[in-house]
Length: 208
Image 1: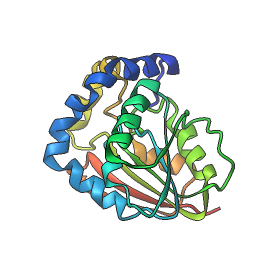
Image 2: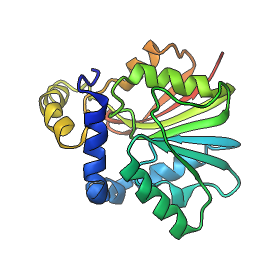
Image 3: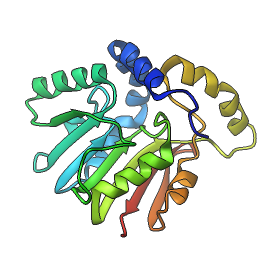
Image 4: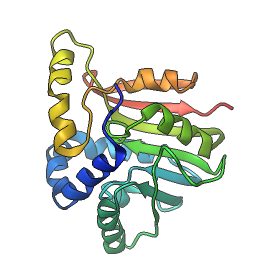
């Protein structure tokens, strides 16, 4: 299900909650998200793009040998990511940019990765196609994303609660991201469940 609200409204929500965003994320971080972040880092190599860097939760886990660029469409979130990188002594190129319309040339990056990003991209199909465009042929797209459950009772509950989560901070909890990947034209990818059928690790092999 695609977000119908104007993109600038979602940007403003993320700008608004940037000062307290990490408080929302801390419970999931404490449970297992750190472990899954580290799992993603093992997949990175070469020239890397992080889409939706947010407040920079991944920065402390970046491999030291990679050349990394990080984008986000919320300037307030980027400010927090920049501060985090400075405190950690990490060199990262931060750019305010929309994943649906990136300024990078085709075939720029060896690896593109996201962690819980495509829940809030207004047009996820367009965003997914864009990350394929900027990823090199035979490059790799690595994603950890939460999606709508297909369980009989849980899925409809997520549908019911979705307008609330969107209005609070712009994130859809009922996205069907695997189906969106199919629709975006990808054919070679792996999906594994990390937590029930809600949190998934997805690796897309970028065939062109």
